Image (cartoon, rainbow, N blue to C red):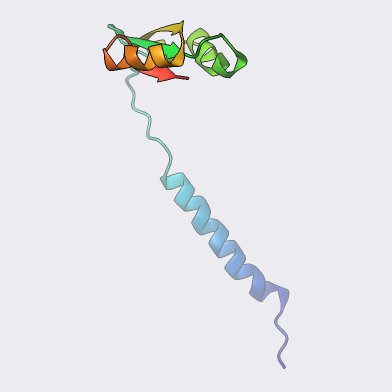
Length: 101
């Protein structure tokens, strides 16, 4: 029976750690010298129908609007609430782009 020393276990461990570090560094984003505007010049109008009553389940939609995420993505989003069947019909007719019910 042979006994391996601690140093023989450490070499493969640190080799893998170094390889993983280099791999993650290679996946990094390259930043160019010119900065793009975060807000597009023209915003696409989007209508989103939400279920009948304003509720906490719709909070992420309103937080994203308040934080400017839609605007930064080039969207001018409007929300309205309605009955689910009416919202589906509204989307089919093209009045709503999305429905979350």
